Length: 349
Ligand SMILES: [Zn+2]
Image 1 (spheres, rainbow, N blue to C red):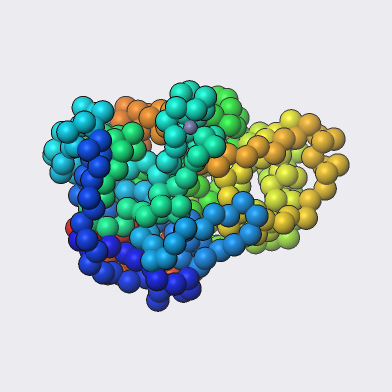
Image 2 (image 1 turned 120 degrees about the horizontal axis):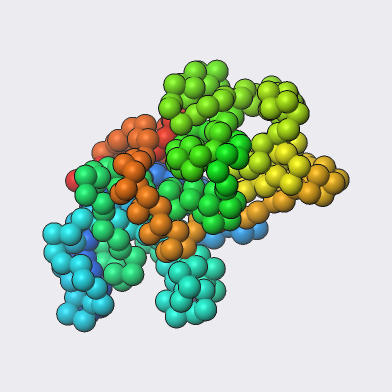
């Protein structure tokens, strides 16, 4: 089978497509023929060999890339605990967990002490065949394409967790999404609008500001290239600010994200793509009853909840580009140059 492999860390040029032996499924496992895989910042960080506090690395090289994806079941092991059958269209959830600790039993799998991520701690899904525990697989809703489904598991689970599970979004609240063109950001704006929020999008790019303002689920756009841009938000909300900020950028945006918050507002974070050592004022936080909440990805429950919503409402990922497996490096370049609005998906067929 072909796979997207790295033998060393570095730029997009270290991504290679190569033939590997087909997986040997265990008796309880299910084999999936992968159709597509959504790219995430995670893929870029894994490829670069990013190190630092809270960052995991592949345990060994060579490493197969890819955290999220979709495909078709081709084989079900004799003792697999599942009702999946060959031919079923499935999404792959990237969270790996023990299945029996107190968190796993509640569906809060991302809190499991043994938690690990496909494509980061273990070989990923950017390959033609993958053998997995059926606990990692969920059927794709009818009418959703493989390209769309490949951009759901990691992206929409993270967005859902930020807004709903951790952020406890309520009808009528104002939500500001910082770095609004990313995959999780566009998913968060779709979900927030559907949940009855007033949606604000912050971007540094005038071109993206124009394109974002044309999306039906974006109600206001803020130019976050301007120093002290949170003043725009406060001014345009009559001094009130927003109730929830979803920020995956980190150090460059935290100060203004906090200042954009209303009294008692919540800053929900799922990443730090721009750096993880922000310069903030502790007084600006506590004196206005503001909270900072961590929402790293989400659990199986969050995944099932958001896919159920997508099935009932027809919400679909915004796909910026689809690139063939051999051009995975080009997909990484699109993300690194910040050219995208929405998801970049690798076609594995
Ligand atoms: Zn567990």
